[in-house]
Amino acid sequence: MSESPAGKAAALDAADELAGLRKLFALGEGVYLDGNSLGALPAHVPERVADVVTRQWGELRIRSWDESGWWTAPERIGDRIAPLVGAGPGQVVVGDSTSVNVFKAVVGAVRLCSDPTRTDIVVDATTFPTDGYIAESAARMTGKRLVPVAPSDLPAALGPNTAVALVNHVDYRTGRLHDLPSLTSAIHEAGALAVWDLCHSAGALPVGLDAHEVDLAVGCTYKYLNGGPGSPAYLYVAERHQAAFDSPLPGWNSHTDPFAMTPSFEAAPGATRGRVGTPDILSMLALEAALEVWDGVSIDAVRAKSLALTDFFLECVAAYVPPGRVTSLTPSDHASRGSQVALRCEEAPAVMEKLIARGVVGDLRRPDVLRFGFTPLYVGFGDAERAASALAEVLGA
Ligand SMILES: Cc1ncc(COP(=O)(O)O)c(C=O)c1O
Picture (cartoon, rainbow, N blue to C red):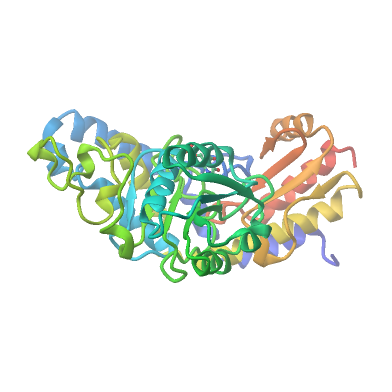
């Protein structure tokens, strides 16, 4: 760097077209690089949640299921998330945790597979653990075999026995972005269905579910979508599969006429059949309010800033931190990078503790990985420079 990193950060922040969004969030003085775990609070959300509690629940009570739009919230909020993941309307439904939606998606995909003799569910071997646990259980329940495969080996592992492949779009540990378009087409060429976990990509980069003909997808909303702790997840079922999608959790909310209270189940049309029971309204409406920060924001601009931020952070780390003290696990090529930087570091737990004490909040994946998440809506280049400088200080540079 010819210019000082701090000088460069100031220039990049001044030119940042998304910089104005930071004021929409309740952020203090520190540097928050943990939005890949729990997104920051959009400042208007508390007032909106207070209205849901005091007026909608407190005054309107049961009337709010209709009058406050509670009943239709899962589909309405699904349609608000849809453009962020490249889905047309009517294909995303919000509710339950990601884990529960992984279950619905994997079992649903096995049931959608037109060839019942196919024996295998292929799962990303580096997956976030819950997906692996649930895929294993889904395999046992459906009489299939679980085949864990590293995403880079996935095309070679697919074959005439593959029924379904479950893949993470971005690796939670390393921040590696897997190639959704090419892997989805490889899965399809093998005659199988593609299920994607978008937890670490939705809200950070373009996903293109419809454009790349993904079959089913799931994701959480508490990371880059800033929905709040434990906010409900979502399930995408491509329109072409909806009529045949047979959820393994058919509840009264996924019935075509819930209030008919009939003993036999008849699935609702569309994304609604991905629902199960009564939606978690307080969390869901907090999420709905939080999603307003996306109004007018282009996901391409978010991606461009995310890559610039992670590039700049790596540049500052290289400039400040003595060689050999940290090793980046995050790919340097843009096509393989999500929106976080993972640094392998000796004594990572103590290092992260000291960083947090200095106001730089990232997180840790045991035993030796420091994770820094870059949420382009509220993280700036100055934050990246401060974080790298604090890291160098902690490492005794
Ligand atoms: C990739 C991925 N999948 C699944 C989950 C688990 O989601 P939930 O706790 O909503 O079930 C997480 C949580 O961080 C995750 O990162």
